[in-house]
Image (cartoon, rainbow, N blue to C red; front, top):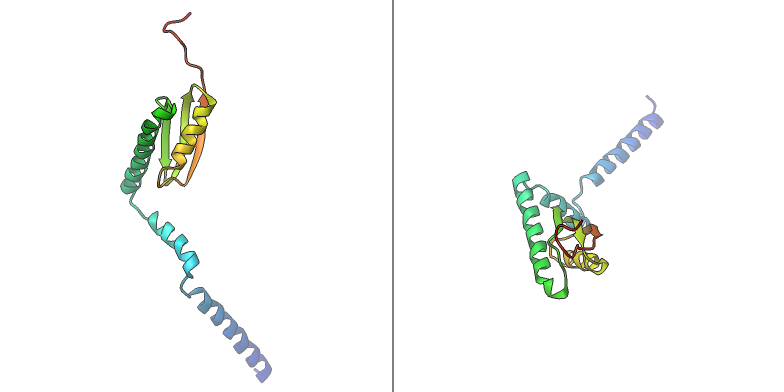
Length: 129
């Protein structure tokens, strides 16, 4: 092997080792938040389920507090999955759809809200034919 080939191989090896060393460096503070969020997802399934249920209860409590604002949320179902909330069901007016969505967004722990709430007029009497 001549000196030129040996020098080229050593240079290539140095570049490979430099790349491997760069990959092994600790994360910066900016990406540390993402790592912590990923570590937060290392909850056991039971812990995650309990956290989702608690978030849904917190939203339901906020809905009850909004009755004075006119929200009638008894027909709204709340599903929470790791901060992502889905609202389904029906309310009497379009304003209540917006109100329910905004209230859910304001609850701590909610990352996003998807509203699948429909506007359905309530029947004035029972057993109408």
